Amino acid sequence: MGILAGLAAFTKGASVVKDAFSVISKPLSAGLGLGIGFKQRRQAGMLRKQAERFLPGPEDPEVRNFQNLIKRKARAMETGTDPITATGKKLIAKSQATTQGNIVRSAGGDPRRVLEGLKVTGKQTSDAISKLTASTFPASQYYTTAASNILGKISSRKFDLKMSQRAQALRESAEKKSASNANISGALGIGLPA
Image 1 (cartoon, helix red, strand yellow):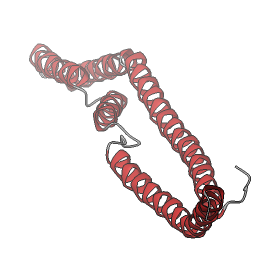
Image 2 (cartoon, rainbow, N blue to C red):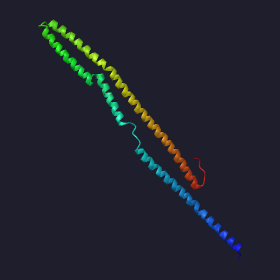
Image 3 (cartoon, rainbow, N blue to C red):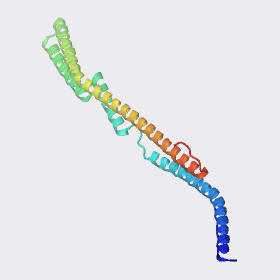
């Protein structure tokens, strides 16, 4: 057997080995591609769960507490139970009591003068309390507006957060679909649309 015949036999043997390797390598690389694809999918799921733990809540508790504080202040001013109005009412009542005592003493026992004086002080007291309560109205309106603005910001934050989550989920879905199609098509040797 000559060199050429030996070379031809070697080339034919190499071709058989190459064909055998090709037959074995296709399923092997398909299985490897599928395995990588599933591993990537599992890792993506784990990363998503980790990321969700760091996601802020839809409401900032400090902002909500501040809003509740402002609402309480507005309600207190509207009802006249805020510290300034309450103190003012006490001072007016104390002044009224002092004035009424003086009226009774100075009337000298005349019931008509006592009743007339008490009527005047009652009207003055009522007017003073009305003025005091009316003076807190602008502050009450300010607090009500501030609470409403905070509520608007909370609602806006919730909406923005939901839209951000939706956009992220759509992006991740598209990426996973593309990666999955690439791995499956690579494993099966076919082209799938991204």
